[in-house]
Length: 317
Ligand code: GLU
Image 1 (cartoon, rainbow, N blue to C red):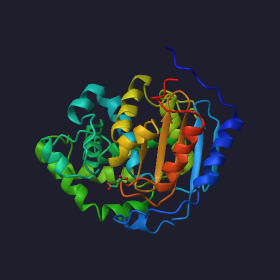
Image 2 (image 1 turned 120 degrees about the horizontal axis):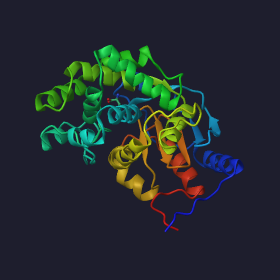
Image 3 (image 1 turned 135 degrees about the horizontal axis):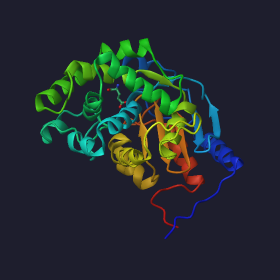
């Protein structure tokens, strides 16, 4: 049975976005992440939502120019690069493609699986993905990862020295994870190099339109709809979307699949991006997080837009 493709006009997108905004932009609840000092002091009232379609149309409202820390969403970009460099089989074999069922920075998850991270979208798997990238040295590794972020999202994505300093001086737990991976043979470069570069990749700044562009690039089978560049091979995008479905929304990835039905990834900086394959990327930003680590308002905004426009991958009619 061929899936029916609903056609939406620019007015439909705009109306869906503004309706979601009116309902949820001032929703109360949640708290900024505080274990990274920088994130604790980002104004909690900031809020934005954006849609970028695979044709490059852009819709946005709120603080859509405000640049926030990419954090965990960076794992999607590094996964893309790892897939391009070593291929889907190696990524699945060396990192995995399953949810851990445990928090994103769990050490227990590693112990339970002989050091295999299971998912490139948890901290252990992301550091393992960093280590799989083809690179001569640490600076080359970093340059390639930043370049992938820029090509997926927009050239203005840059490292924030302030965020990076805040993270590099407090990332003791991630350093411990890196050494555990190294001892298990599941890290493929120097342990502290992987952790340091991973921490940098979390410390770049994006705005909500750029984040939606990242989603739209995945939705368009690897072609950035704004720059028209084929950023990654079409064959690799399904692996990324599958991983996002499995582990993209932390411990509530299953609930998200059940209620929204779209691959998505969020970060502790308050960003969230969802992908409607073949149609669009939807992104939102709002710092206060729920207990699972997902933006309270961001989830509502994205889910509402998807729902109003009738997008749920598991809906058959
Ligand atoms: N830099 C953060 C960490 O490693 C990212 C976490 C996240 O957004 O999930 O803890």
